[in-house]
Amino acid sequence: MCPLCSLSEGCNVLVGTDTAHILEKGGTVLAGQSKHGHCPALWNGKAMEHIGAKSDRLHTL
Image (cartoon, rainbow, N blue to C red; front, side, top):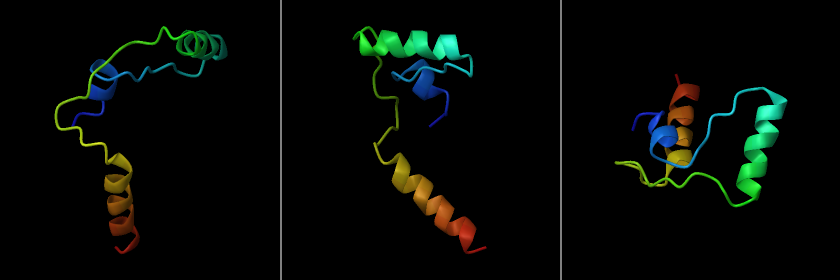
C-alpha cells in the first residue's frame, strides 16, 4: 500500500510542525468534524505487525 493512501483515502491528516495548524486541526477532530475516509485497498489493519517483522529482520542483519 502506498504511504500516501492513508492521507488521500483514509482519515489521516498531515499537519506539519506549525503549532497553530496542529491546534486548528486537533480542534476540528475534537469537534467531531474530521474528514471521513475509507479503508484503502490492501489495508489489513496489521501495520504494527508488519513494521515489527521488518524491524526484527533489520536487527538480525
